[in-house]
Length: 388
Image (cartoon, rainbow, N blue to C red):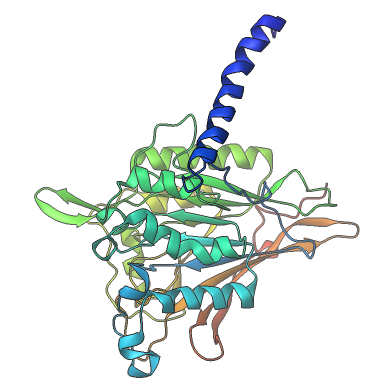
């Protein structure tokens, strides 16, 4: 039970706040050029489906942003710009995509900056993410294996990303002790005016796959640890008890089983070996046992942009996005779109009907390629439409 607060007690609480405000205003008058603290501009929360029942995610993988105009492009054809090609080409591509696609969320899936080329990590991140902030698009980010190679630790990077305007990123889930930084859940609720306005109809799981480690004296890439998988399973279980809903997951470094997709009927380009960890921590088994994840979206291997199915779950690469990242001349930089559509009932929306994906190339026409349906409600007895 709350205890009553006396007028004297209330005054003792208010005085420090008022004093701080007065000091801030006074310091601004004394030094108009001084930095003034401001509140983060946040998107309307929770995120929700549009009035037409759609929700569109733009995946941006491996921007490898450096220092802007001073950072040269890699592996581009002469007609792309030659010596004039720089990080600005990456920014221009992101702006084109936002204007053309009008995404509801942008997912930056790691190696957002290239530490060795970024003299100031915070400044590089601000420049890299700036189009999302400029257009007021909600966005979420995770880390890759290069982000921390500049002037900030992985914890500092995720803290900074979480505090940037329009970010829905989190450092880690409250109440759980998990490995890494950037493990969190984002729920996408039903549209305003529907009976599902207070329900999460699509769950997004973001995970930190680490950077580099040494195992038995052998250098290898990072992997998703047991504590992260325990949190993931517990979160999924709790969400499914409230309302069964499909989910998507985003992490940077692929799990080892993605290598096996070479022997399957994948869709897209498989042009380089899957650079994964030597350690198999059970990511695929965990995702299969959870039952709600329908698609996983990866970065890391820039020349791969394929989707392939492992035990009923689609694993999809975003393809190389950034111009300072390694690539291949005459193979355009690209991004992936994930489009989720609700099903319309007699009176209202009734849950997710389908999840589709395609890629967009940074060419003259923003060419759309490899469109495919990843999941339909009618194909899965576990997720029948919900009427509320």
